[in-house]
Image (cartoon, rainbow over all chains, first blue to last red; front, side):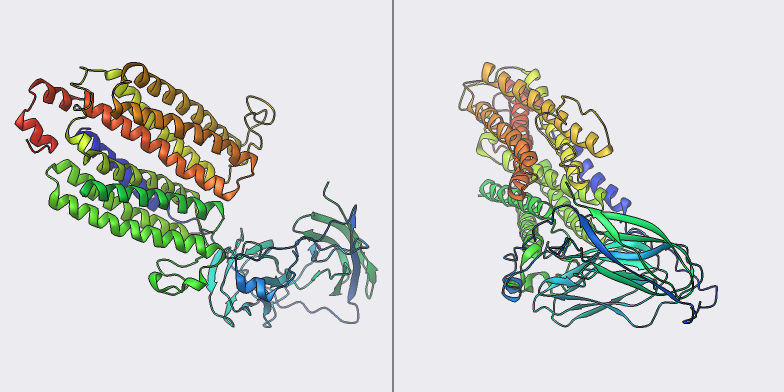
Length: 258
Length: 325
């Protein structure tokens, strides 16, 4: 092998390094925070309407998926019979962890509350598994486990972040700057841990419970598009018109995956 | 001793490539969110009992990488002090620079959440580091110093065809690895879910960017296979009595067969992480074996070998080659 050949070999080595360095990161740019141009919208309690409903699965109820936590003995000790929260369906077909929100039809400015939404890591699972948070509202992420976690949010419209929480009791605060449904969260240490957040510019959202029920309260009268989002089953939408003090029902049905 | 040490560095680098494959295959690349620290700890003081889940793979990869870096410093210094040939000393320093750049790329890809361009560069440079260490190990061997002549008598003049074939095979293997790294870091590994067909056809009936990347890797495999068969076939047909060529040619056939099999199982097992990582590491073996074969053909039939052969013990040439004449 000639010295010239070796000299040539050194070129791609550094070219590669330089190219990669020049590429830089692709950390997603956060969308500009919404400027609160308009005064806060106040919904008159005398006319406020509400929607309740149930989310059901159309098809065979899938079996509960067990999680193997043997990769971390502390998790395995803490959570003796862990089950996946990704698709939780009751015997009657009621689906939990479906986010229902007003997708279209709202006007006004709904400032974010100062009270934080808490995302807890306990038993090496996220609680809640699905949640809503307003743009600008604090999100507090807590590690209640005696093991370490990393919290990795992978949004598109907001800033991606990945932070470590090696010590039990650690807290991390974050606020999202742009509306986005849904933002996935994962722990790369424990591959089974994931959660989903809906970042909205209003407070009209709810997550279905184990009985599949949800409730949207305090809506101003109007015509709305409601969307139900499930991480595995996709989305369903419907339109609803609410008069003053209406209490209507809006049920959603998802087809079981074939 | 220097040659033995360089072989140790080669083995450590191969282990590092396998460990890197495990990081990607287990999706553990971001399980340690900071760099160069680990969850705020200095890397070497991170408690072993906290190496759980994805951290085991990511932090383990960092520890092995640090060890390889340390070994590479020793190798470069050793070459600088003990090696007579300036170009070999330069290879040592280039390898050291490459491994430092490799560490920086590894850190950047973590801090920027695994952007494909940086991750692909990290994977590609890893293979170049492996090639550089393998080059040092090859050119510091006794066989190289002796020009691979002793075992078989004088070199057959020429065989430029083999030189070209072997070099082309090594280059094709590296390009194939670049394609593989691109496929891996753009999550196109299962873009075509069946093998050996593609969606039941020889050519995919529909195309996306991921399918194109995946299919390019399959075409690359076919190209490398044909080149390996041509090179190894040529060696076995014309240089069967020359162990310095015959042995790597046979090894090349073995690692190629293993690689194709592993590639098939990557698809059939839906990227089972051990199979996937073994495919990455064995890819380095295909490249490395092709490189050794190419280096030896250049040593046997290249310009320097012919000069050395014509003057037998030509002092000037021997000094240039580092042979203590």
